Amino acid sequence: MEYKLGMVLSGGGSRGLAHIGVLKALGEEGIEPDCLSATSAGAIVAALYAAGYSPGEMLEFFETKHPFRVSRLALRKPGFIDTQKVVADFLEYFPDDSFEALGKKVFMTATDILDGRLEVFASGRLIPAILASSSAPMIFTPTEIDGRWYSDGGIIDNFPVDPLCGLCEAILGVYASPLRRRDRSELKSSLAVSIRALEIGMFYNSRRKFHQCDLVISPQELSGYGNFETRHYAEILEIGYRAARERMHEIVCLVQGP
Image (cartoon, rainbow, N blue to C red; front, side, top):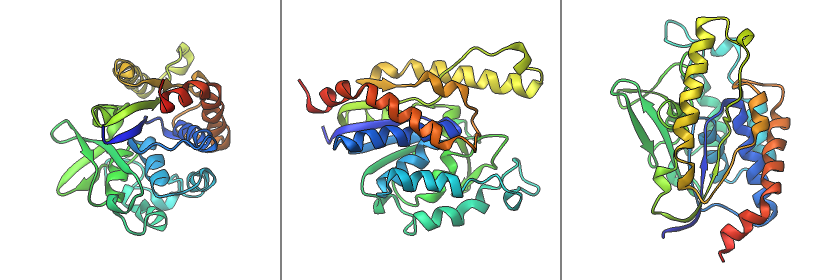
């Protein structure tokens, strides 16, 4: 195997900050994944981690660079937030704008919405790949790369373990979009029902792939938070941290082997 420990980081919007908590807990034990495969919010975390940023610095990125501002609104484009208007924020953290400048191997996925297929990015320009992977439909405009339009990788695969299969001795998965029951009062609009249907499909498609990992962390507490929470980042990070600490013995055994 080319790598010892691989990690899968799912999408989940703001809930993806739980990935930072898991990475923080691993770091306290001297455990570092050698390779990461991620999508959407997980892709942002994976890139920041592979670029050498600390958990505190990663949290600061989300707290100070969130795109929900009037200046980021899209004009005559399909979506509310223009992904091109957040490029400058990412350049502050990734000035080289290259996968090759990262300290670890990273795969990130996006959905080609023209051909309806999954694309895996692992080389070349980094920032367009991050934006493509995290361009949630209806919220962000699609990201154009080489004439093709890309949206959130979670549409097709919210748990991209496949790029790691056959490359890693052990695979640790973190799934940040657990499913919970909804009340009728939460589904009063066609949009709410449509989003719920997408959420259900993503969950079951992802769960069918959990067996490809040696261990999966998916804190049910995350289901109490929305995709676009902006006031509870530290709480969400802490949930991921606690979940990893609770299973640290299993993680250490996984890394060290029998």
